[in-house]
Amino acid sequence: MKQKLSGRALLFAIVVSLLIAIILGAFLMLSASHRFLQTKSFLQGQLIRNADAGIAYLLAQETEIESCISLYGGAQDSVCLFKRSWGIYDYLGARSFHRQDSFSRLYLVGQLPEGCLNAAVYLADRGKPLMLAGKTQLRGAAYLPKAGLKGGRAAGQPFEGGQLLYGEERRSSKFLPRLALDKLRHLDQLLTLPEQQTSLAPKVHCSFEQTPKYILAEELYLQNENLKGALLIRAEKAIYVGKEAQLEEVILQAPNIIFESGFEGSVQAIASDTIIVQANCRLKYPSVLAIYRNQLAEQASFLELDSASILEGIWISQEEYSPSMGRSRHRLAPRSKVRGFVYSNVYLDMQADIDGQLMLRQLSLKTPAAVYENYLINVQVELEKRPEHFLLPDIFKEGSPKKRGIIKCLE
Image 1 (cartoon, helix red, strand yellow):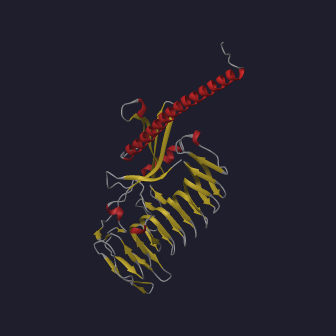
Image 2 (cartoon, helix red, strand yellow; image 1 turned 180 degrees about the vertical axis):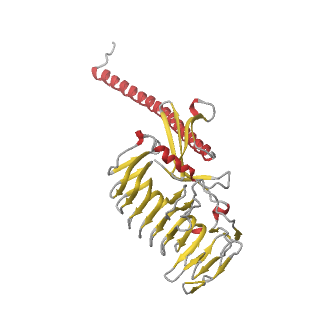
Image 3 (cartoon, helix red, strand yellow; image 1 turned 90 degrees about the vertical axis):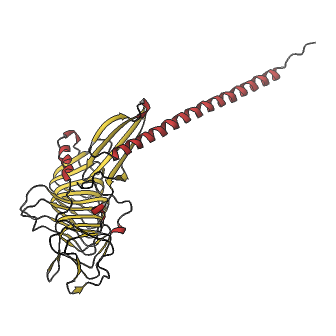
């Protein structure tokens, strides 16, 4: 006699079959997802490797570049590359892509200090020695005039710093290493693009992946603005930066630029006449203070880092030989500090401590009683204390081919 399956048994069989089907389906979906993630991970890794290879290629290039290439001849190896100037620095971009996927790298870059660019002091040979007074100490190699290095007395203080030089002494030449500041012309070229002009607002952030933007005015006072990225701020007369302003990576360009006491940020300040950094400011690496004159001028220029202020980056006092050059006297005040590189081809009143390098044409130390030429008094110049992984902007004509490295990531 045949037994019939009860309704419950049939329902149980159906439920078990459904569970088995669901489990098998889940395993199939898991396997497919795993294969998809593996493929996605491989492609993402390939995109990252291709972008990094593109950056390595750009680091070896001497000139600006903008092109898309296939690294290894395949469709999966396509990379769009660019090398552009930003102030006195360069920045690199590499975007690798495959179908709808892409990956980008953006870096600010510089050159490794080598040769005379890797010395504590370089003083051009104008026939006079470098004189030390007070508790001055020089630590690192020094490129000095033929007249050498001597201890002396200034403001009633004899030299009492121990050794004259803690490092190797080498011979300097009559002229400082030449600068290639023609890259600043790209800032003028940017102003020919009206579509890139923007307005000053409480917050302006510009990506380095895009063409830089600019703000243009007759005179500007930055108070509470938050400005970051690929943004050029230019004024026809002056820019005043208040202590509450938040600036990062931007360029300030005007005949006159003044930073209010207490300001802290990262900027490239480029002026033709005057830059004043008042007391208790901090300009973070890789900031730039640059007086740059590429034309003859009658009026003296002035660049000052006041007491208790810190510059982490580059100081440039650059004038063409002109009537104003002999009258321009720039100043690093007592108790100020530069952590980086100082380049000056005008008279420099140097009373700051330097964690890094000095490259000077001539010193002029002013005291209440007298002016002392080629004197350093009560300052510390220590090459080994410069910021770790410090890189120079690629503005020196000597030393080609140059070794380059990455300063920071950009957005």
